[in-house]
Amino acid sequence: MNSIGTALKLTLSGSSHGPGVGCVLDGCPAGLMISQEMIQKEMDLRRPSKGIGTARTEEDRVQVQSGIVNDLTTSGPIQLFIANLNTDSSKYERFRTVPRPGHADYPAQVKYGEAHDIRGGGQFSGRMTAPIVAAGAIAKALLDTKGIKLAAYSQAIGSVVDPDEHPFPEVQQNPRKFSVRAASSKMATLMEKEILKAKAENDSVGGVVRCLCIGLPVGVGEPFFDALDGELAKMLFAIPAVKGVEFGAGFRAAAMRGSQHNDPFQVSEGKVVTTTNNAGGVLGGMSDGMPLDFKVAFKPTASISQEQKSVDLSKMENATLRIEGRHDPCIVPRAVVVVEAASALVIADLCLRGGFIAR
Image 1 (cartoon, rainbow, N blue to C red):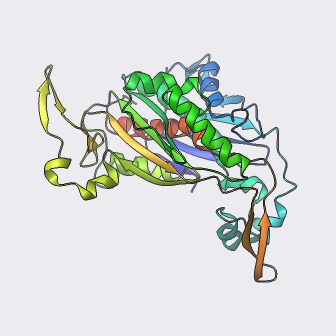
Image 2: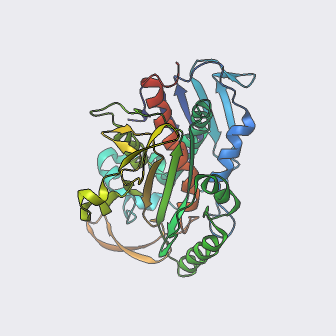
């Protein structure tokens, strides 16, 4: 299915090499101020950076086709469209018979047969995150009316890991200064070198995006099955190349004792807070008032120029494959704003459902 959300519902459309990609965002309250410039600013953060990104550059100009008039939401469905203007489908047809390792080619071919649009990966392409970012800009503006803010950064790229804890203002401002979306200039330099090294070796690297959300009221989330962390995980795993999501201490919690992992409560300035945040701001599937803190792991870009082993489905025999075309040696920098957008959509949906934002 290509829809997600309940009170705020997102439906994606389009494909990587078709006329364009787009979405319908239904459920946004009337009267929210949304400018074209606001959406475009977010879209520009997703575009590839020179040297460390793909040579495929799209303008990604968002066309608002309904739901926003004179920069105000009408409460009707918001329809957004982004044209594909720079496509080259010539190298993809061969992947019907010789599927690319690490891609969806093989299961999609088995499931859909000749109906599968293999050009650019079709509906399985990272291109489908463009409308998520556009819709996410609207969700961010909706959350901002209640003082809820999100920010993310590249915490790791390849073997380069940022060991520092960055306060929210740094995470909100610094990554937008650097092409790799690092939280400091030192890490930006190291991460860029890591990407360029992999690129020079016709290879790729993955990494980790860390996202923080502050200002969430206590109780956001609809247990049992629509828990805050569960809904976020579902949306985040829909982003191509995501292989892991963890909240707070995450997998480290398995090696901790309860006395170490439990976050002690205390009263500070008339508010209940915790002295640590191993839970990542989520207890029982609901926000606990602390910053929401989670990490998203991305695998290395599957399309690399090295020769790889595959199979020839037409002959049912082993084969080799060398992928040509325009691909990112690392998608993590472009994914930072995607993680922010996807998370904003989920949190806005749950805030509407829980009555924290009026419909």
